[in-house]
Image (cartoon, rainbow, N blue to C red; front, top):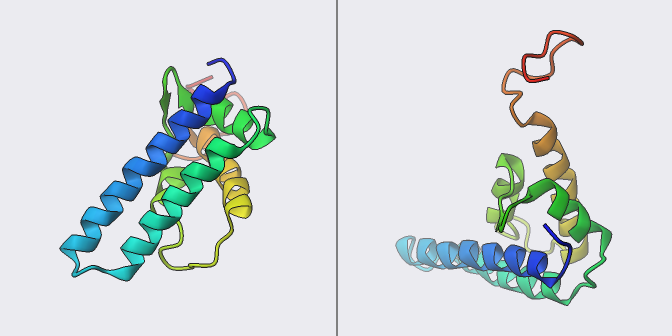
Length: 127
């Protein structure tokens, strides 16, 4: 995918979708403040990502690692952490969290198709 504002829009849209899910969960659990805090944090994260320069290295890496075609598809660990943003730890900053997403996306990509872990050289059926 071409590196431009479209990538950031894909990420922001995904963050907002998860924020909406968190708001629904808050209603299910008697306005659970953790869910509401998470939703608000994800909305803030979406705005933050949209305001970053298009050539931000983290955006470039997340594009390479988690954008498939026209969709932002974070791997398991990355998606899990996005869904828990500020749920347990309300003071997590936007910059450090985005840095962490790159680390997790890198780990997710390294595990893609390797559900049994890393195999010895020459013994990997996916290579």
